[in-house]
Image (tube, rainbow, N blue to C red):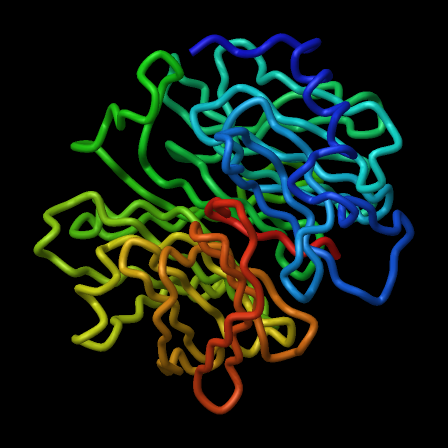
Length: 373
């Protein structure tokens, strides 16, 4: 499918303030406030794609149109702007400010590269790091962009693996953890996995200042079909990951793991009755605001569950149809969950697990939810 022109994208985004779906709710304060805001890529009833900005009650406050399906959003808190990345193997990303006061910036991936749907800003907002595929060589890279210089691409760093997906900052603010999912894709073939028989998923730690790879943890060969996709960091600095198993559906390998820098990887088996319900697919991972619990979504199984970050103890699970997006809520032990059905819920992880629906919007929320903080 041909990429839309820059003019077409700008024309779409210029109408963001007057979208009829939201009516008078399509306005919110541009200045930071005590009220937490969230962002998610969505599909609207007419089939158009957008980024939705939600409040803590789950109400959509504004929509920013996208030219095609988006995946995740990175947030620059210094300049209050977001960048939404195309779903893999897409080649566009759209930068917009929360108030809608400046013209959006449309980024195209570098020649021979496509985005993998995720990125992060540096703490001062000056740099953007995005996971990308060098699809002719079949290797993963992190593209580095000067956010203060019109997002000029400065270069790239190999991730030490294939199919990099989500990347997150460790608490030191200089180390990036990168999930190499192990799957190679090409824009000419859509989402067809080109190397399923030769997967080697891994987790890589990279020093963002020196661009040096500090460590790489490759999963055991028996788990070579477990694609590592999504990450979250707990308050102790451990990196939690969720996988998507590309092997025999009748098998139920551990889908959840934890990388403790300097101490290797621990894998956690779910309760026997839960394993088949996950359908071997973890859609999102997020830590609670206090970092004491880590939640996982299994949208194909209509399930969310959580583990205690310190011990790995299973805290419980809750049914939530097509629930996938996860982000820390205002309450320290809680999270917000979004679903493809348009429903929004709060997940409480203290004293077990409890899920409470709080809103329903006329959109289909995509896989991820980002807290704008």
